[in-house]
Length: 77
Length: 542
Image (cartoon, rainbow over all chains, first blue to last red; front, side, top):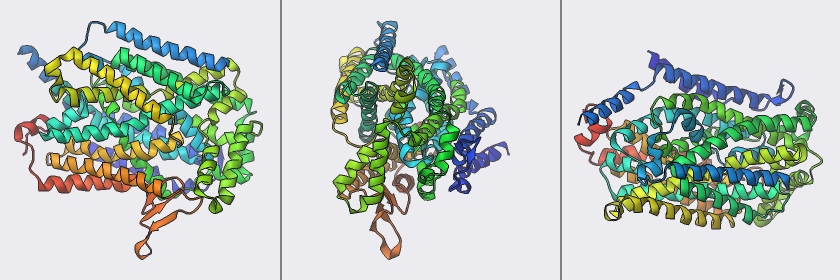
């Protein structure tokens, strides 16, 4: 279930990159940042949060175990 | 001239770091130490050097230059899509490649492909296309170095000399320091240019009297389109999300993934990567857009005038005249002009060094090419067995000299802006090669013939786009030149910025074509044996 949610989160964030709702707006945030640029900046922060979620809940730790097992076997040999 | 002196001091510093790395590794002539730093890079160096090696001239110069002429769209096109796609591919693919490298001793992607698909000369074909596509990336670094030194010295350091200095410095610390030297220099450079973005925006903003006035004035001016994306097609914008697929397929990135001491080091890398992109790109894009409000720098006004003439009269001009105006309006030096105008001399020099840091990311590409040549060609075809590992390392060093000289010679003649050059060839080609990695690591059914089909497809489409764009001149800003529209459906067109296929950038059909070819050809051909598959998938062919 966790993995499905994470896949959905990745796909959703990818779709949200295409922010057609701010496409033609010259509105300024805080009086100087164009809203389209501000949104995409927030998108980058959201990407970092998503990576944190993936690292926390979907880390491929079996790969590390395989490498450690291999190293131990080589040591014995 | 003071900023130029500061930049030269910076160049001396990186040269020293590279030579220090050489002294540190003296006596150890093993290939794995020279090309992969014995897979011993710690977490801090790993994160910063991996990020740094992916940042090139266009991260600062090209992005601000593109934003100067095209507006805020630059950030969404390359930066924010990269902020998602690149760390995701490092998470999914980089970790697996690291584990396989640790278990089986791979030093290059082709070594892994040859083992995975039980092939020999098909691996050489993959090497060839990777090598050819990597050279433009190296050229960007030299061009950027020449542009930076020329601008920061007020024209005193000619382009050819600046480019030669950059080529020489990069070649030297890569030659002496190998991967260890390259990683340490990249770490130093990343710290510098991460600071650059923050400092530059404050200094230039203060100098301009604050951005609020400039932004509000731009909102009310004919240049308000630069604050939006109204002149960009959403299909084109979507197409660009395919470009960051190239990152993990770049050999120098994949080779960097092999250098981590532990897999846990990837954790911080994938989390902080988007934030590092934000720290560099957002200020540069914003400054590029705001540069349009600077009225007392003659060079900026000349660029705007060239852009205005191109927009209003370009349709009636000869293609050569249009190309000339495009070059005049190119904004690759715009951020340097802003620094010269608003930053005190010593700070302009430090910030110039930050730009040089980004510009000189060609070090990893040069080293990667050398690693690939010595492992995938020299060692594979018997050179290591015949001449020994020490000669292999020396061959790698010689290759570094030759490739740098070649790239420098081409850099002196290439006319296109940094951004266009990068996007058109290297990124699209590598994005089209990324299905090789996905197929090798995630699909038991992939075969060497599927890999060969992808390789030939990528080479053919890159050449086809290059030939098309050489034969059909770019139209003036505005609607594209439609080349093929059967039944009223616009299939192929030449746009002011490149080529469009069904309204998308060529990278989209290139990647889709690669995926389809890998699947179809693999299904029709025989798979590797169970022993090989067991190395990559638990349970073999089952």
